[in-house]
Structures are given as structure tokens and as C-alpha cells.
Image 1 (spheres, rainbow, N blue to C red):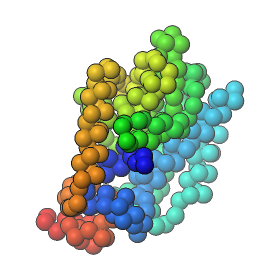
Image 2 (tube, rainbow, N blue to C red):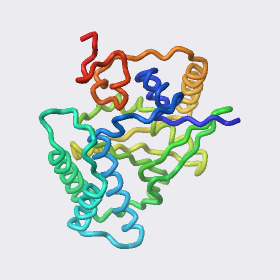
Image 3 (tube, one colour):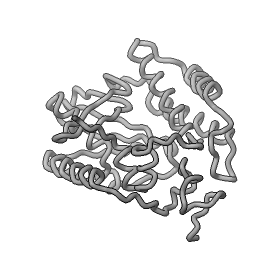
Length: 257
């Protein structure tokens, strides 16, 4: 029997084994299903996906049309149980942030002629008895450099440095599948929309082999784990399971604080 993992599943275990147990072992549906940050990210991703699908049909939408699509997606999907942790931010503030992300990205990349092949491309990475499944935000082929590009959109307010990008696991994992399928070099590209900046990175074959070994070790650790303790961190306030966690009280503060 093949067992499927995802980058999110692996990261959840590393972040907090207790959260991993609730989500993936017990399969408990959280009371707080989505934070406003994740909601914003999904709406922005959906909007950019729609944009590139239009481009693939030889129809480059006007900026007003893209903003209209984003606005419609937001209002059709927003619910008042979406969690806002920051007391200095409102839903309207997050909505406006998304508008600015869209405007900045559109103005920087129009007319979007970078030879996008697919959006939300599903990939599978084979690792012995396990498979890693994921989705690429956007796959591009650059004929001038004869290489593929994996593009990923980030809506978080933080901007990592180059060292962080060079150690990022998610897109590196995805590049294993793309390299196996097409047999060409792969460039990793992150769009940090809050900063209107792009960060790129590459991996050697040796680095990808080392990554596969690291992921297998992590999976085997997960498979052999019987105790799933909660891990206190700065992410606790955003956790959708915080009301079920012994480390967290009702207002989102760690009991050890």
C-alpha cells in the first residue's frame, strides 16, 4: 500500500506533533477552519490562476477585470467565522492588502508573456514506498535558457533572505518531479507579493538526492512516532486547533507564558 504525504503534512509534524495527530491521525475537523491570512492567500492564488488561464486563451485581462474577479471571489467566499488574530487589523484591511498585491503584480508582469504552461499543476514524487503529492502554482518553460521554472506565490508579510530560499524544501521537492518528467534544469521562483519582490534559487542533482534521503528519514520518524506532544511556538495564536490544546488557553496565550 502506497502512503501519500505532502509538504504541508511533513511541515505540520515538524511544527507541532500534536497538531499533526489531530489533523492527520484523528482527522478532526477544527472549530476554526481558516485564518484570514490563509483565506487571503487562497483568494489571491485563485485570482492569479484565473489571470493566467485567460492569458493562455490569448486574452490578457485589464487590471480592472482582475480586481473585479478578486473582489467577487472575496465576497462570495468570505464568512464571519474566519479567524482574525491581529487586533489592529480588520477584514477590510486584509481585503485591501490583496488588492495591492494584485495591482503590484499586474503592473510588474504585464503582458504575462513568459510562456506559462500550466497553473495548479499536480505533481507526484516517488520515494520508495511513499509518494509526495503537491501542486505547483505555475509552471513555465523558458526556451532561451532551455529550462523549466516553478513559480510560487507568497502573501505573508515576511521576506526571507537568499539563504532561506536556498534551503526551502517545498519547491525543491516539486522540482524532482519536473526534472524527472522533462529531463531539464529547473529554476525555483518565489513571488513575495507583500514586498513586490522575486527570489530565485536552484538545486543540484546531489542536493536533490540528499533531500530525498532527508524526507525519507522524516517520514520514517513520523511512521514510528507514538507520542505526539504539543510544541509551543509563535504560531500557536494562529492554530486552528488551539481550543483543543492543553498548551493554549482560551485567549490564544500559551499557559507557560
